[in-house]
Length: 273
Image (tube, rainbow, N blue to C red; front, top):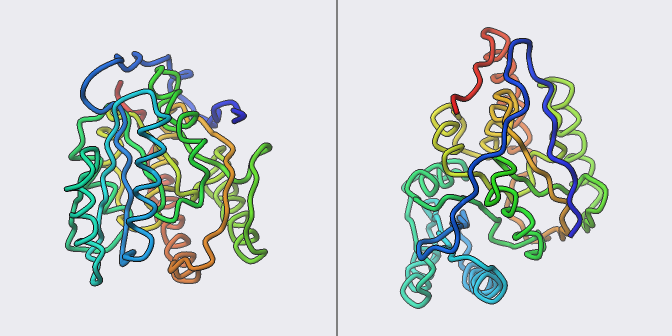
């Protein structure tokens, strides 16, 4: 897997210099070093085979203790039953049941309740190749970066998806660069990780509880001068995805407008380290 350099955010006047390296995560240790959240809503078909696939990958190839948290967003099918059964059969899997829908709500709840030093999430369809998982979290474990994202829009990425989704993704990220002056390349790839102390500081500032959660988290991190590492990924579109593209796009546009107004009213304040 090829790395690309961490994004270098355009820092506002008076913001701190480049963030120093963090203290490396102490390993080995018995407690989980990595907690991977899998947000789900009505995923009774894909949940079990893909969680077992993720578990096998981590068990056989990840060099540190780990945990998988299945965060159920008020599913109305057999998803919570399957999640509970997986948690009973696989010692590294836990299930979390939420009363409301929203990927952002699921991640907030799972990450806020975890004590693992590195927190991540992957989409349940595992569209992103799992070989990128270790390169994603390694810079966080070493202390090099504060957040890490998979990117489908950088050199080295290999993507299989329809023209419509490709155009929407590229237009959305171009819009972010024009309106919020971001430098990261792919805000919406469902493959991200963050150091726990960074999450603890940023999560109280993130207002969105749905699909815009990722973008808002990254914008706040970049405005605070934090290091965002990017990893080109192999990504294959899930043709059975239940995501409503139009509704998600409109929600993202509302989020961009809100953040632009908020950031224009006040000078960004760096995260206290």
